[in-house]
Image (cartoon, rainbow, N blue to C red; front, side, top):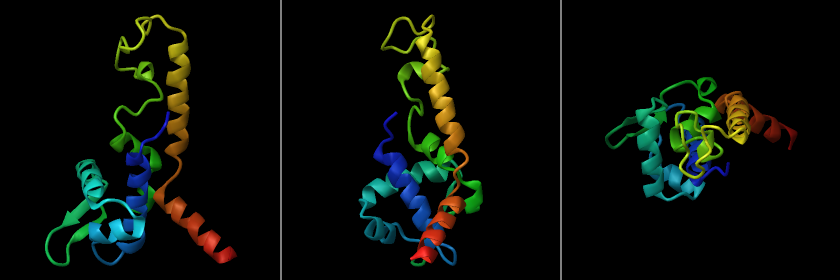
Length: 145
């Protein structure tokens, strides 16, 4: 599976808000400047992340975005599932579908199991990586410098 910019930029967005949004909401314009990501693109990502309960927003002159959950409760797996549609390695790995649309053997195909298992293993690992864990890695790197 090749993750799109949605997952990569969404992770950067959440990390930025977790660092700069401890005391107050973070305007997307500030995230856009720090992360060099288009404001319009960030707006699209925040809609999905708010709907999924990962972000909250506040309107007004002191408004912006903040985490809706603690950093230890947000995993990279969650972010990828929210932003990637569908979140599977191949179309035929989507267990919800009887036939994948690319191959007419999806119902009988033994190789389909391989792709479904690879997707499961990938998410099992991504679900172990939290925003808090990534921030701890960053702190360790800074201490070593």
